[in-house]
Image 1 (cartoon, rainbow, N blue to C red):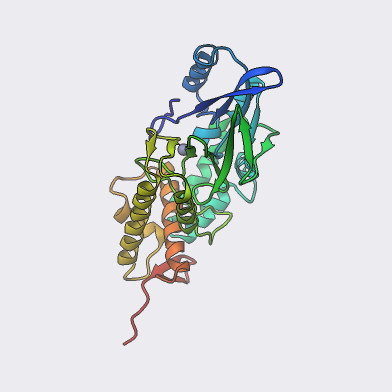
Image 2 (image 1 turned 90 degrees about the vertical axis):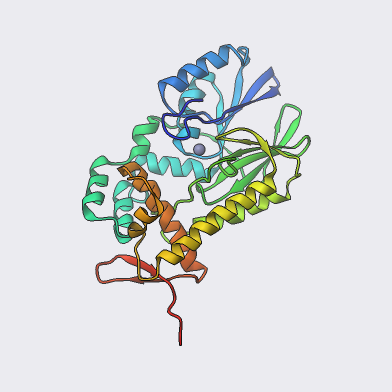
Length: 320
Ligand SMILES: [Zn+2]
């Protein structure tokens, strides 16, 4: 399905299913809420999907390119959304722009990590993007528990929880003739962002993500990975190695840049070659703070809060 921003698409999956009423589909992911995706779904439902009813829509996580069209697709098909409680409630909190999830909290949080006041003021004026992007959310769903086995057609699929990219991301694994619908956890080309979210300011999202992908190594080496972005592939262990190497390099780079006490915002021009717009700045700040938190929590950097309120991170002084 098309997505208006990079990487330009999201993969959705249709699994042959059957219930007491006969053959049906279980879909995985709903896509981004825009007219192009709505048109694609309408074509697919009557075309490739042969007019067969859709009974369930499984969603890996709450980001707009995966879940944004969930309510619309559920209305069109009469299907129930199935997802983790963590993702459902996070979506509801962002949509509702609550004190625990709203733009003011994010602006205050980024201010503490050095984002200049003019930019946090502009963020406040722009407001929350989630509600504007998504438009409508389901008010009910079927919760999937981490580790739960779900029967789809003749197959058993197990929900595997992953942390660090979003609060309670689920991937779906079929051990027999092994397939992993990986969502954003194991993308073939890009490294998913691992943001520290303002409502959990000390979180080690990077450590959580690295621990989560490590657990996929236990799967059969022949597993066909169906990622949410990019082409299907085999070779989970090599991909986990590459993702770990990417983060290790990023972490080493940040340690080197923190010779003197340095705030997350001060690192942006060193880490991102292009100028960042306000939307990209939000992503970049969350990502850089997460790496700095990881370096602090693993003892590689120290953290100090200066008189201006801003957190700065620095290498440990070497005792003579
Ligand atoms: Zn995604």
